[in-house]
Image (cartoon, rainbow, N blue to C red):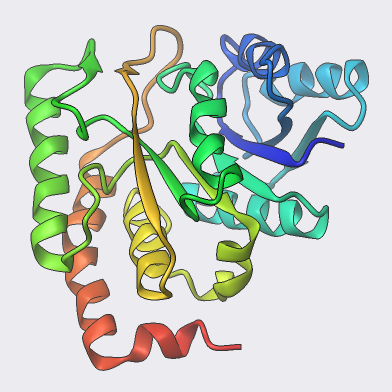
Length: 247
């Protein structure tokens, strides 16, 4: 078993499922894979199950009854990864917007003891986004800026979904008390890690908009992120956030 796990949520990703799994498995640093499939009607799970048979122990799948939210998928994946003893647990998209070849770069600061959480950042060295409409680039960039202003979190890409955690970070959290399910989940995880005293390092990446399949982003998801940060900041100021994560 590898010491590193990458969790890849999938919903209707038949165009990408096989190729993203193969791309991770051929990396020079060994990562095991956990796919969370939310009952994709396009046959994604069947493709992944073929890979489970082909690479026993390296590729794994959790099938859920339906679309239950990105955050709940990752929470379930984090718990699975902790139960199976992984030291480093990462999350990434299935559509190649996150380059699998960047996974070792995200793992490196954790393995070397420089950081507890690493963020594959689109904005730490300028704006590194390819094939997004300008309106969406501006919305994402200024949303992250807004989050930094409200929360005081010193992370330039607060909504990033390409993240790696040391197992100790996830063990320190009460994962059942993570509140948000959409993109605000990404902000809450980073904010909570920082509030609990963990070190976050941003690693520059180039984000490429999906070529195959359909984007899952919508205005409701983004709205949750914008309004959720106020609740997060308030919970930190009142002390309720740390109370939620006391064990």
